[in-house]
Length: 132
Length: 132
DNA sequence: ATGCATTGAATGCAAGTGCATTTAATGCCG
DNA sequence: CGGCATTAAATGCACTTGCATTCAATGCAT
Image (cartoon, rainbow over all chains, first blue to last red):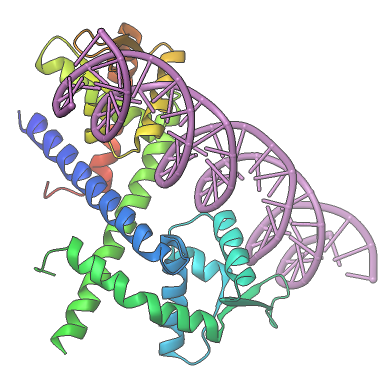
């Protein structure tokens, strides 16, 4: 019976995650669309901006981004291509490994992120009622 | 400063959800592919099977499914169409509202679900280490 | 009963995603 | 040095998804 009960709890837990994820993702997507961004786009910009805050470099390898963001390598590659087309990031070659690509926030990208961040945080605040 | 700290916590919380969701979803998808099912497919079968366990009827309106599963109405409609093509569910018209559609598990669907469920539960068990 | 707004589900369409493959640059072993 | 396995990123492709629209059935008001 312990088995049955914990199974039920497991399923409940998973459903909870699913539910929070779906609702938050959906709201985020809607909110960010105002700024011409999808949730994934913002996620990438956010990581880049955070990196830029720490050291001034703000240049990530695609691989590093992939490990911090929940996207496949191919999806990320295309996403970066889109962001570049919109002038929000720039792709530059990597001096120490010419296969690699360095992705950096442009001024426009930094600006867009700064614009969108408050709204994103507001949504998170709404979706995760205190006890944070 | 409290503001800054709770913002950080908020972001951490959200990233946590994102991370658990992505990893679990991915594993589930891989695991269920063995049975020719995607994660969404199983989610629907699971709801139907659960309903069938409670009352014998096991016939849901599409709307009811939509509210229990995290998919848009259109995605669900197509998903049901796929499941029907694979013979796992059947669509029947709804007597009290002829616009409505009743979706029911077929025997094959029930069987497939029964086959896949243990693996799904196993994955959940692995992804949510105890304290469930 | 007739007409009109509303609701349930299906469908056209464009976008984003993952898998598998490709292309380019490295590293290593002989 | 030359060839071969390996790694980084880009691309072909098929599939799923969501939004907007469509089509059919209701229900309500006149």
